[in-house]
Amino acid sequence: MYARDIMSPRFHILSPANSIAEAVKMFHIASVEEQKRIFGLMVIDEKDQLVGMLSMYDIILFIQPKHIHVWSEIEDLEAHAIFGELLDRVKSVRVSDIMTTNVVTVKPQTHVMAIADLMIKRHIRRLPVVDGNNVVGVVYISDLFYHLLEKFL
Amino acid sequence: MKGLLVEEAMRRQVIQLSHDVSLDKCINQLIKFKVNALLITDETRCPVGAVSKTDIVGAFYGGLPIAESLSMDIMNGPLITCFPDDELGVALDLMRRNGVHQLFVQGAEPCAMVGTLSYSDVVALLYRYCRACPKGAVRRSELTDCSDQTQLLIVRDAMSTSVISCRQEDSLARVIEGLTAHRLGAVLVQDAKGLPVGVISKTDIILAYHHGSSLEVEARSIFKAPVASCDENSLLSDAIRHMFLKDVQRLFAYAGDPSRIVGVLSLSDAAHIRSGSCRACITSRIIAAP
Image (cartoon, rainbow over all chains, first blue to last red; front, side, top):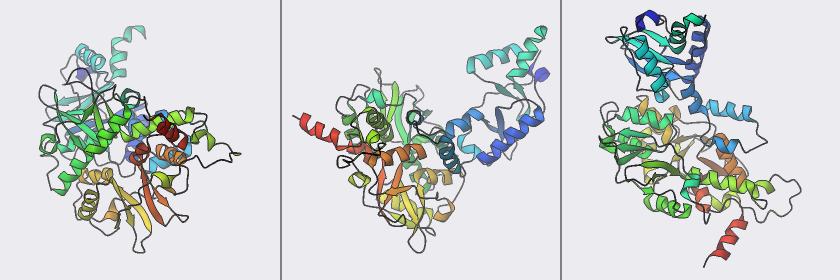
């Protein structure tokens, strides 16, 4: 069993020039259309090259205040209002500014056990499947999970 | 601050890149992790220098192509370092003498950097001490029946009165010249009537570089509004809290009217006060001095 057998051939992508607000909307659209929570999206440039991945973690890491530990000690905090102001400052930031650029990929012929090994060792939840220069699918950890543990279903 | 060590304030995450990565990647990491400088390593993963936001701004001004230029082309060395068991005061002096906003914290091995220390890390630690201190300004300012305000430091005590500004129609090249000439992290942007309308920081400039802007675009295209500001008579502790909550490095100080900017308070100014936010600590330091 190989990556091509368990990958999702349908995937949503982001452009490096997308704003963070556009990325958040795309996460929502992708989750609705795929009928499962999508926590990370591939970033593909105008030449159809995979240039990065953007996860919810990347966005939360960026929007959280640098000194979050000080926040936790201030009791009378109206966090919602303050966070609203912080989000205003994200307007000028694009996907390319905060995406992860060292993307680990697999080939369609990569064996599922090799995929499992990669996901465990590198703490990866999704792996783009690349054939030559083109992205042909993505393997989510849930795809792998249900494939390997199908016997229990 | 006496007795406080670097290890109490430092961050334990060191963002490091190889000397042969592009400036594009450097900017991505500076923005993503909100740090002032990156550690640059050689092929053996030994530190060889640092790339700061200032270096990136210089690369933009110098017209270096962002995708082809490498970190080794613009990095600074040798590294300015301190040790985890150095006193914070010593580290602050080191930062000031070398004109840097971030130190790398060296571990037992010369090649092992175990953390970073910036002015804001120092202020954050002091702020937490002030909150825990029963005599501290942070607690006292929360009390409505507080009558003795004379011990409390105000923004005017720590701010710089030298405010550098530019006009909305100024080019980015001119803004960079202003920042560089005065060794500043940000400039105030004013409209035609001289009223403050926004701020441009080094972060805004490196974002413009990353997005492919030219040096000729106008300041109005990248400035951040509104201006984060406070009254010059505000309590220093309130201003510091304001900076942490808004996640900004500086507040512009006004005299009564928000349109009348008279100074700027940065986290580095606050760090240089060194004794938290009230005079109680300063007095104790003078008494304790030999």
